Structure formats: structure tokens, C-alpha cells
Image (cartoon, rainbow, N blue to C red; front, side, top):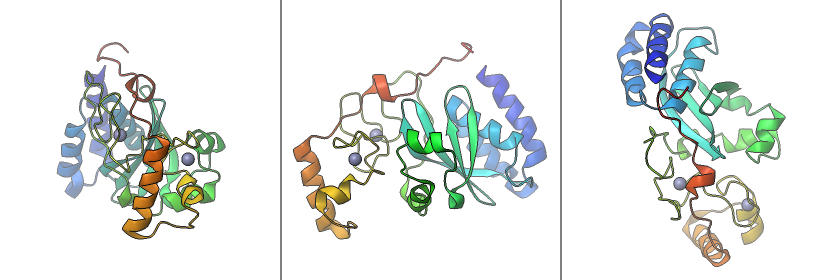
Length: 218
Ligand SMILES: [Zn+2]
Ligand SMILES: [Zn+2]
């Protein structure tokens, strides 16, 4: 159950979190206290501190979400760490600077190679913050688009209509515009026109949203 998981995490945090970061770390945990995805990540992090040193999570960001499986980045006092998280568990992948080594994870989230993942993870600030799930809603967990609505542009859940991959990550924006990089508003605008022409793919709660279990169903 979620409440026992929460207790376990708090106990782990007593040993893991430096005293001066404790209050902030507990406040963040409280924000996610009803969210199974975040709690799985917290549990994995505080059970196994990546550097073996006292540390605390101070933010979570969504790198990708596909078929109910999140690729999340946890920013801590020491580094930025990647986790693959679903309703059951969180798996540690390493820090963002080293990218994703696991070939299955790379393929699943549509990265051609580890180098591509490193490039894409260079600037973590461009990814949206992870927000706690509301178990009974049908909204995109990142941008809150309703079922059948378009995502906010830049939402990492939006599927690319050309390749079926992650629109914020695939290379279609370059092949479509014929440019190596999109610099400035004009480039973006022309890409968005092409995107609308092609037909954007709206949020589909049934296939994209994690299958949220209610507390006690474990
Ligand atoms: Zn969205
Ligand atoms: Zn694409």
C-alpha cells in the first residue's frame, strides 16, 4: 500500500539525507505522497544512493513517457540521475551526463544510440517538471491535455505523426524542415505549420496514460 511505502521511504531518508537538506526533501516527498510513480523512484533512490554518499532529491522531471512507462530525471544535491519507472518499480539507469547504456531502454524510448541520449539530456531544464498524478482523471500527466486534445507544444508525451516516436526527441523536425537545427521562432513556426498540416496526434488516455492502480490493490 502507498502509506506503508511512504513510511519506508521516510525511514530510509533518515539515514540518507544530509541534515540541512532534510526539511526540503521531506516537503518534496509530501508533494508526491499519493503518487505511486514518484514513490517508486524515491524508494529506489533512497534504498540505493547512486554515489553511496548522503544525498537528497530536490526535483523530478519527465524526459519521456511511453505506454505508461516514465523516463524520469531526479535532480539531487550531487548529480542528475535517470530512472525508468512504472507502477511497480523504478530502475536506476545512471547519471544524465553518461546517457543511457541499456539498449532496450534506448530502443523503447526511440534514441538511436547512447550518444544521442547524451545530447538530448544535455540541457535538463528544457524538460517539464513531473507533477503528481490524479488517479481519477484522464489528463496527460505532463501537460494536462484532456483525452483527445492536443498536447501543449513541447510536451514529451506527444507522438510524432511522421515516425510514431517521441516528437520532442525524434529527428523528424530536421528531415521535415531540411535544417540541421531549428534556430529561432521562424524555424519553429514553419515546423509547426508542417506539423499541423500533417495532423498532430492528440493525447490518448487509454494507450498513453499509466494504468493507475488504486491504493490497496497491490
Ligand atoms: Zn501532454
Ligand atoms: Zn518523428
